[in-house]
Image 1: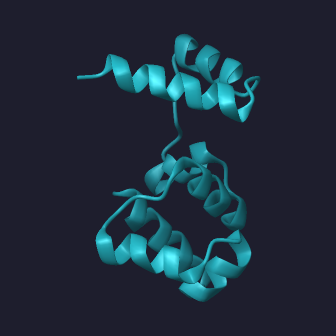
Image 2: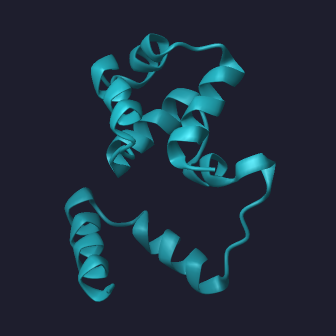
Length: 102
């Protein structure tokens, strides 16, 4: 399941239109619509707003079919430290990771 499919699934489960998701998340309806038209995933910040609107955590969002997300000790440590960083520090880490990937 893709991120856009998951957003659609959560919307349909709640009976929400794109307009309702826009109202709940604070993201313009045109932006939400463009994700689907262009088949483009939302940014991390937008996805956080989407999760807040649906009242789910990011882990719950990515736990398709209600499968629990199992983290290794190292993954848990990364997430715990990530949550201690401010937004700018998180952006720096993301840039560093992107530079390390092929």
